[in-house]
Amino acid sequence: IAAGVFQPGDRLPPEPELEQILDVSRSVIREATKSLAAKGMVVVGPRIGARVAPLSQWSLLDRDVLEWVLAAPDADQKYHSAIDEVRHMIEPTSAMLAAERATASQLNSIAAAYERMQKAAREGDVVEAVQSDRDFHIAILKATQNPILQALDHVVGAILGVLFETTHMDHFKANLPRHGVVLDAMVNRRPVEAGQAMTRVIGFTSELMGKQ
Image: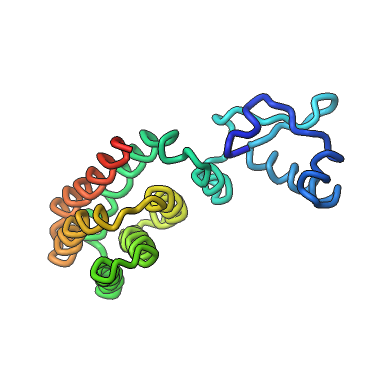
């Protein structure tokens, strides 16, 4: 469904057919359908069976739904503008709050993630580059001391997972100094500079996405 094989309004195959396709039992199909209905992805009713619900009804802040949607092959293009807007809404403000509120331990966690990013760049380790970059941004969220923002870690994590799937080491290295500026501003308790620096980090990635 998330990948678009079944479009909104499409009726899902009957249970016996799904059993064969997925090689699972009838009870598993029914539990999965109930779960998808609870997440707003399908509508179930008498005589209509199970149909795919409109995207507007999907619980996109649900961890599973968001990860499924963003794991679709064309997610980076399909949700380019939405991803860009959400990042600009959340991350610069988070950087500003972290610059004001982060504890010494939290600043150390952010710095440690940045050091791992530097090491990954030196060694050309793409896997570690992706993980450390994500950890850097998540550590900043946690340092805001705002429980709502902290609870959005899975949203930001899923978004970054999509963006970083096609990470090129040259692009990673080019954007690395901008992350360093964010860190420096937070360590020196300069919230406005931290927010501006984070905007530049996001802007670099947004420009790359627009060119793909």
